[in-house]
Length: 162
Image (cartoon, rainbow, N blue to C red; front, side, top):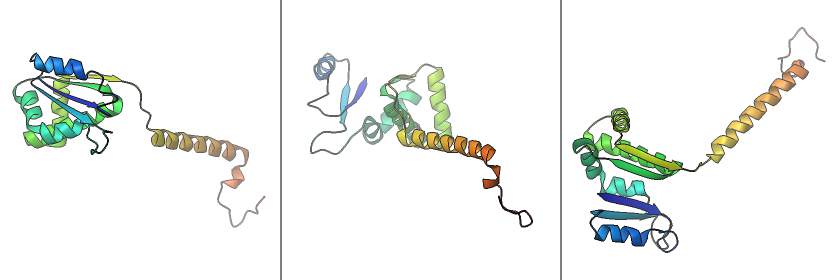
């Protein structure tokens, strides 16, 4: 079994380091790879980077050929990125189209072999703000159209203005 673990910094939030090392020493994990996204003097590395660059062939082999399982635990943004990465890996390694790889993930979920334990809510602030502003503008425009319809109607050449 392989564990790919991600956190920001090895010294600040690698909370289960001792437990993971103990599990690896006892043979629970064959491999442990850790991604640090805010490690001083190191490039940002995310779980999906490790999956893509170090484990792509293994991900495809375990999920598609060996009928293995994948567990993804973390916040919704990370889980979405991992899912997209796994889909691209399955497409590339399996020689299939991206939508076919998405169907494979659907089958894995149906077979209860792709597991997600997702926590938290991450708002896509720009998207939400834009949508709220658009809706707000639309409501204001509707109100103004009913209050002063002449302001929104194109001027007619034969009708005098207000």
